[in-house]
Image 1 (cartoon, rainbow, N blue to C red):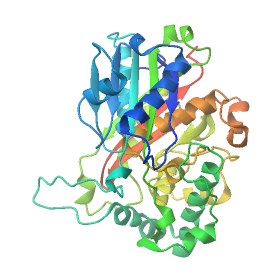
Image 2: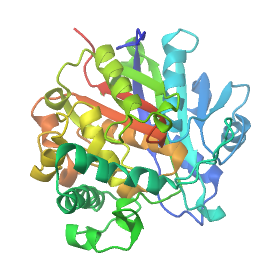
Image 3: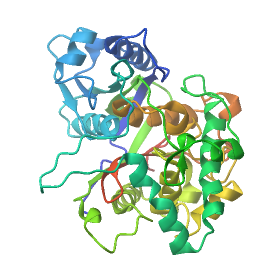
Length: 400
């Protein structure tokens, strides 16, 4: 993959995030104002100080006017971006590249979604057929096919694998219960999750991420200017995006046990950041757990577990809050819900808190105190066989 990257040329110097919830008493503008106000305050700047803005939303608004109007920005370039569930990450990628290019000194990426008022149930993109066919399966059905495929390929008993993915949901609910900004803050046992009504295949209700309203914001600048705004910036080590060509849906060899777009984005991000062993080098990872089997496969596609070993690593606690590599310490999509345009920046907000040792004590990962200084965020949008994938890596120290 031909990516030169922008390692250590851009720094995140401010972040903000609203609670993710059913905000029936808040409007879209309120969410953007709240998250932006927090982010600008943490960077010690005013709205007028930012040179350019990007706003990511999948379905809550159109054009940059939606943000310029809400924040009453005057004479500023404001661009709306959309890339399915990677929309918030795409906003950060665009703002970071703009600063790295030298076009702007200070830029802001905003991710937002306000969908609960519409009755939106989530996680089904409208198919846009160009080949005479329509997708007829729900997102839950598409991701449910991972479990029988994985069980067959790696010789895992289906009932045992069912409990492994329920353990993933239980882990993320446990983490989210410690997070005041998460939508769902109740711990759930493996037995309770397995007993939930089926949605598709072996997946029950609590194997699926919820839908929420929310917003998250990042302020970025040139790395050499970072300490003008904060003593503890995060340096952008890697930003990688891969858009699949949809061939998985028509390839008889595709078996649903891997997401090639994610493996490609991960490999590219590691090359940009100079990472050779992510499991031992990263302090934490925030990944796109839209459904529990997704997080299982991600552990292998992102190189945290060997092929066919993620189910054992999940079961043994490798990815628990106090594990070797904490995954989704903020509760993930499972506990936060998934306001599509905001989720990518919400993940980065957790990296911001954790790497700066500002996460609450009850969910601060020990790996940071042990000296690890890198965090990974991952988004995907789409379905097995056709998806976009983003992987970002940030760290507290610039390269020597």
